[in-house]
Image 1 (tube, rainbow, N blue to C red):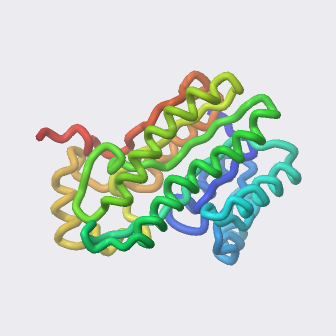
Image 2: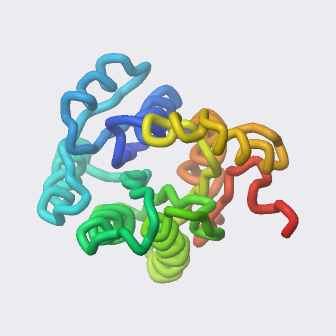
Image 3: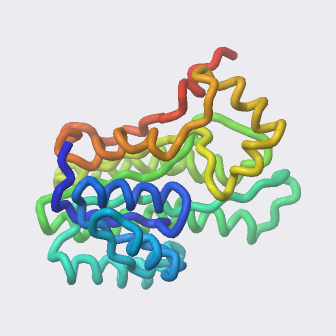
Length: 247
């Protein structure tokens, strides 16, 4: 399970799960490059980290920014061993009220951005014996919910993209997997999950609690480390049994 010395890029690392993942991986001995648009937030993350975190500016909706960011990592480290493909956004509201721009923002970030980052990372990994990619999907990639049409569609696509890329890149030594978190309070959803509606959702989860960022630590470490060396094409739900609920 050791990550010591591995060079790992984490996108969407300025807040939420991405910031937690970057800090966790650095604490486990990885050389972490934390990517996001908000470089000030990344600087603060690096200053407070236990371990090695290097900020790198990256907009996952801009292919040139992605290529430049990964080139900077490889130029500094000589290789890229892992990618946590985490950047994502949500839009909440009725589908009938969603504008074309609303839809495009979610798909461009959550799906097209995830693919473009994975593709550029794979180019770097292929020339150095391979690596591991872990994308952040969601249990909404397997189920449905009101007001989340674009988000759920994008995450379902990430689940299938994970399988397709795993198939193509296995021969290059690149493993591609994903995590599908259940409801985990972050800056984006905390107010909702603390509301009466959120409490109603919590009561339907078999383990009767929301997740925490720490619940993702073990699965993430497994999929990035050599301990997961024969695992590829898998999306692992981390949801307290949410997807096991009876109809």
